[in-house]
Image: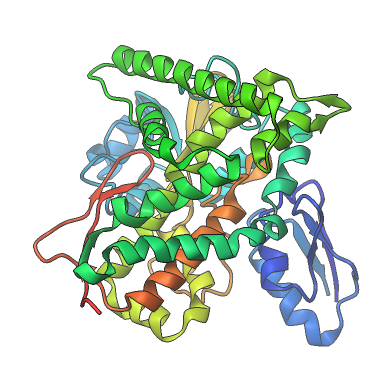
Length: 63
Length: 401
């Protein structure tokens, strides 16, 4: 699984890195950073939690 | 009025009040039935005050397209003489201010306040816990966020009443007519500018460890913020930072007082509190709508909208739209996917959302730890305000320790 964030859509709601800090991090402004785009199988569920709770639909998962 | 009339012909939308947030004093306490009527019968409704957009999809479209749905000074008049920063600033300048302000209110930064907020919450609870009853709005919901705000800005706590007067005069301006209300807002606006001008003069002479001092030394695009910039930020902070958390806390505790089984779940398992905060933000949507003004003609859901139309993006109805939220009436603290819009969205996403979340979580944690068993005072009904849904009267009873 690959996960990425659309920087045009992310406005820093911060749901992803609060709910799934194993996959998502925050930059200085509180916008989403994804340090490792390739999600290991054991973290796939976490990545989906981040995606499903982004109010802007800024997180994109590619299986 | 053609859309409203059309909707009235097909559903019970004729019972909807004619105001921009569609809620009146009767319905502000339980707005969900009205929101459902809008979603099913009039997803885009024209009223005397402008156009109300109800669906999640359309609300998201409006908030994302901030140049089409502008939040500049034409969208709302709240006593200010210049655009509020950053809400009433359009791109491309908007992001310059958010680059400065976002880090100050990012989760990592607001987390430093947690201990303070927790102690303050307990001090407020100490004041009434032995009495076995309290009026929650004046005891906790007002003083908690207002004290946090005054401390952040470095302002004296004695000024609390003055601040409450300022924000109430703007948000719930007294007056019988629009003209009278506008006059109160303008006069109050002048006092707000004067107040902050005076404090900033003091900080110019002597910096302190507070936000106002930080603003005086802050850089935007290689130049310092002007005095007017700082005033325009402070003005918005005052209006956006006090009332909204008060309303959110009131809405949540009112809900929990009336749903003992849900309250019991939080008492038994405090790890549910963060999820409860999100779900109650969705269900209650304390700020039920945000104003915008349309900059071009366009069509939404078959309705023709015109440049200059005043738009209310109805966050409260978007948050119970079943196309986005399965079983929207089920208030589920463990809802797996919760893309609620209680803090708005797009580039104007509530700057204080992370601070608000911290205050709401800590307040609910401490309230349920200290006072697990509370209920509405028998025979009493909580009273909600229209517009922002503050619960201005919330009498609670509980066993004294």
